[in-house]
Image (cartoon, rainbow, N blue to C red; front, side):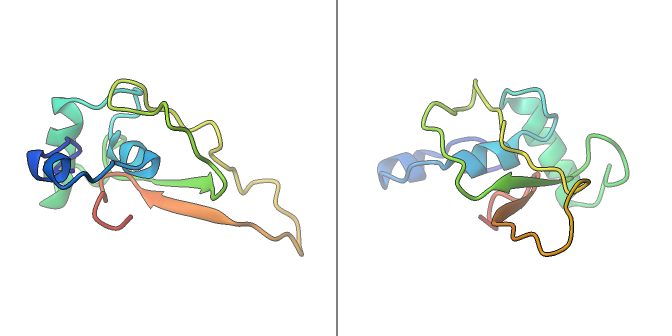
Length: 105
C-alpha cells in the first residue's frame, strides 16, 4: 500500500492488505479510500494539516476485530473502542492506529 492505495508490487507479491491498513488509510473517515485520502496522507507526512480535523488521529480497535469484506470502497470499524467508561482493573486488548500511518501496522 502506498499513500493508502494498492501498489502493483504488493499485488505481484501476493500481499493482501489488512483491514487495519484500510482503516488507517481512511484519513477523511468517510468510509472510502480515494485520492482525497492520499492527498491528506501526503500533506500530513510533511507536517501540513496536523492540527485540523483532516489530520491524523488515533483509533482504538478491539484486537479481535476482523472483517474480510473491508476494501477500498467499504471501510468501517464498528469495534472502535471508547476509553471514557473504563474503570480500574479493566484489561483491554486493543490495536491503536494512527490514521495515515500505513507502514506502522
